[in-house]
Image 1 (cartoon, rainbow, N blue to C red):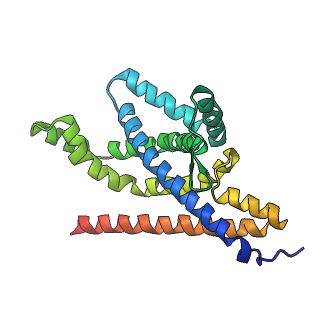
Image 2 (cartoon, rainbow, N blue to C red):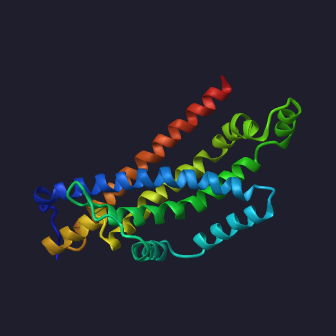
Image 3 (tube, one colour):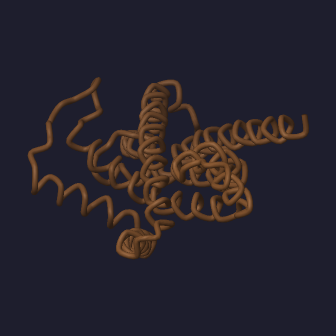
Length: 230
């Protein structure tokens, strides 16, 4: 039976609120995941074997287990250890759901970002590090002023792709009750008894978000390349 899209007149506010929640959670997770990724990448590059080993184990465990399993472990495990605040921001954002959900996604993303950053750092010519050291620069200064600026240019496309993936993976958070886009779409499906049409609208919204982000990162990358030529 043909499904119409007339339900949009009544339910479009749910799509708007779900989209805003998806964007908020994704941005929150991206920021945390990036910091985690930088920290883990530096750990793995450490000359201290124990530190490097810990980072390697973390990366392998995260990459070797499904993200949904990680979310469920953090949601139920963290709630069993500490009393999470049952506090709402707005009408639908509960911190007891946001904290473990965002943390699980951030830790998952951090493992992939760490490998991307590590590869970018290793791609920088070692001769530049040796030259900076010969001028008396310490390791933190070399990393900050010499290596990282060049590494960022090398890893920007891969980091952008990881952010796009993260926006799509945020849809999994509906399993723990976070009212993001997929949770709102499920509500619309139940209310309209239409299984396909609401999903089509949701997929269009996800495409707009990810395509827009890809274009934004692509523009930033072209600007960096233009600055290099100048």
